[in-house]
Amino acid sequence: MATPAIEIENLTKDYPFGFLHLKKKTSLEGLTMSVENGEVFGFLGPNGAGKSTTIKLLVGLIFPTAGTARILGKPISDISMHGDIGYLPEQPYFYDYLTAAELLDYFARIHDLPAQERKARVDAMLKKVGLETARKIQLRKYSKGMLQRVGLAQAILHDPKVVILDEPMSGLDPVGRREVRDIILELKQAGKTVLFSTHILSDAEMLCDRVGVIVGGKLRGVGAPDEIVGMKPQGMEILFEYTGDSKGLRGLLSKATQTGSRYRLQVAEADLYATMQQLCGAGAKVLSVSQVRATLEEYFMHLVAADRAQAPAVEVSGK
Amino acid sequence: MRRVGIVALNTFREAVRDRVLYNLVFFALVMIAASILVGQISIGIEEMVIVSLGLSAISVIGLLIAVFIGVGLVSKEMDKRTLYALLAKPVRRWEFLLGKFGGLVLTLTVNTIAMALGLFLALGVITQSDEHLAGSVLVAVYFILLKLALVVALALLFSCYTTPLLAILCTAGLYIAGLFVKEMRAFQSDTVSQAVQSVLRGLSYILPNFENFDVMAAAAHGRAIPGLLIAQNTAYAALYCAVVLAAATAIFTRRNLK
Image (tube, chains in turn brown, purple):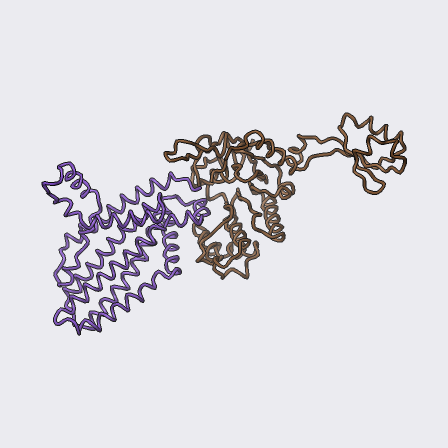
């Protein structure tokens, strides 16, 4: 069996605080998960849930209190692994006295790319993120969205096997978001492993093979987006047309949503047969019956609400 | 070490683009004004005045750059989060620190060489200088550079774990204390307890000895500076910088970049 691209085992991060640093805040608690090779994995969670903390632990910006993690089979403390990963920080900021081309050239040198390849890669990346015409402008004159694009370009500049993106859609307009989505899909097609954190659930549903939902520093669910929301069945939805007397279906019509002569009614799976019989008996025309599945957003909100209800005063941000 | 060079060159580029070298214009103005005025206010000691003034300006301007830019070398990168993307690449933290140190020392070297050329130009305008004087001034400039490298290392150390303001105070405090090392070592008084005197003596061996680098008076008088002192000061600055940078690395490699 192939080694997963990212393996995380019981990863925990506490931040000491207080005057003598005797108290501690747990930002991440016993995270265990893995991301397979070639997989696009979405890391979902509200602000302060522990997404960025996990990512910073993986790229070596902070150090774990407990637990281990491996990327491409190498421990995260092994700096040689950094040549095979690309990282986009959250709200990236770069040396603003450099132009985009100079910044990418600087990072290409750090990655030890030969001069010929360096120039070709820099040009290709600027084209890919749509900054060809702004290549000679200093980064201090860039907008937030443009900086995000530069950040993405530097993350994939050296053709890494694993790409880790912290909120890659943040600060982008719809066109920019679409372009980032395309880049992530291109990376997937090229066989790269992509781990990205996001608040934008529709992006996660659209792009990810699997998602992990983290709330309050704890992983609350991992799986394919449809699989993960499938854990919470919402019942059945019946769409029917009824023009008859409301007395015949009094109980049901009051629960249904009406649009003209059409009604949309949600019932529990166990009540489906009885409801159908009642509708047919009253002369209603059943147009469709479908399973009601929660969206990822609903599932996500459910977890967040449960966490807040459980521990309303817990501050889990590592910042 | 290749990555150290890449980071150093980028740090130098930052200094150049942030117009740090504009101070040379100020230095040039001081030297031109001094050259014009010195002939009118001093008779027979023009060289001495120009050398003293020039070396003092090189030292003060260099110190200001070393302290004020040195304390921001790491903290500015942490505040602006510019080092996040860099440290996620195959760069070891000690390579980053050494690169930042090397970059600022390179900036100071270029700056000091340019100012030294200005000083020699001013000396050439007012008098036909002898070789002794030129040699002594060169050594004095070299010592200033060693001193500045040591100040940069200290500023970098404080930059790794404290705020820029506190780092400025600590670096400046250590520099000033380091100017009185000999006095601390020789301090004797009936009114101060033996314990305090022992602590002062102990401190005098730990603190960086900046007095050793001051040969301004000898240079101004054209006195030759012994080769042994040059070797001693070079070794002392190299060793002290290595110890301070090792301490900075020990702190920075354990630091969480929140």
